Image (cartoon, rainbow, N blue to C red):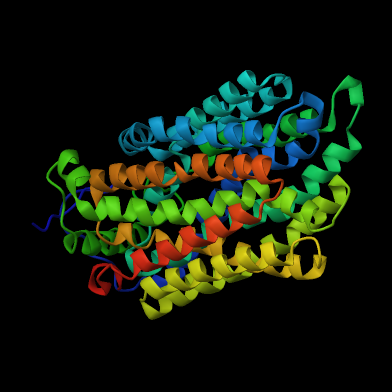
Length: 443
């Protein structure tokens, strides 16, 4: 049943755009107003989520943690994330993006800073779990928020641009984390990893306050748009809403097999993403790079390659209106990169960095390209809950992946088997993507 939706800041019924308004210039205006700011927020979010991978270089020795303890602690984040993500995204849809995103950022910043007091495996697990609870809803909330502004034919590029925040967090955070850990070690009696948690958490709290002042809940409340621009944007969103089939209830949405197929595909994407991002500093070290600052500098290389790849693939996907192959190719590239880095091992540092760059380009491009699939058929409250459900189930891989790598490394004293396992999961994800009818997602 086709349905005319109600969008935050909008109203029921069809919209009549002003023919004198230039559509391209309006979307440029919207893009520059909200996307760079959302990227900055996600850079901070992602850095606070994965900087534990850099802390590992000093933290494990200071606290006498094993790789298994680290992997479990890194992954426990996603249990809290899983439990609260769907209700968090539904609340965002109801109370508005501005207040809810601000709440998320301020709470996770405070918890992230408190990591400097971690001293036992138990406190490590508890703090990671609480961080997951605090941050739950941020990423799917932003994906949902972008659907309020951009129709499907523009969305892959916007999501890819927004999600370049992930490699940018590594590009900036790697050298920054290495510098903090090396330069602040011993200051006032605290270790470098403790200072890293505090200093990298502060921007989240500051940006959370800025969100309240800067972000709008939707098109209609945006004072920086004139009436003609608002009507054009609303008309495009309304036109897309007419082509979607609405689920009559949240129960019907959860019963839709397409939602769970999407969750399975995203699980495969996330296995590669967090397997790489949590362990990249360790893999760089294994490749023969020594010193936390040097390791931080070298981690910037794979992330820089990933930024370029993500922007190109997002633009190409929207330009051609093709979704499946634009996701399959990065998944296969990620698998090739992981296998190649394992084969290069410690024997060829330069070759290992090349393959890790290929792996980063593939696995980090796959996640944003994936989101053009479910947002092609989910709409309204079903989109809020569906996106959150897909993201929360998929992000359980964020628990499985780092824990398995840590356990395998403790058992075998090598990460090679774990990298082969991750490559196999990425290939499986590519196969599942090709089972989706092109007519469902291509536009």
